[in-house]
Image (tube, rainbow, N blue to C red; front, side, top):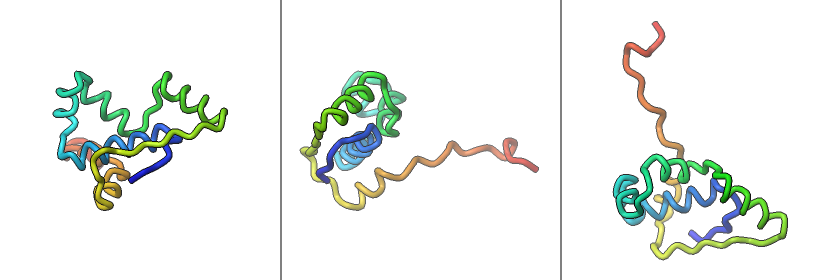
Length: 98
């Protein structure tokens, strides 16, 4: 997996795929980096942060391409799995319409 990073979504998929290929959970990565699991989840989901979203916009406007080459090989099946959205939180039977 060697992609041009042109959106927060592309970066998020790359981060998630690399984390998965390294066998790390979000909690383990959060502990290793000092970031919250929620923040990592948001980044992996491609949520635009003010700072990074603006940087990508600036790079795009200037015609600058940001390339990413992960140090861990990412098998195709993990790359595909990383692009899938997580399941919505499951609802209890009490939450289901009758």
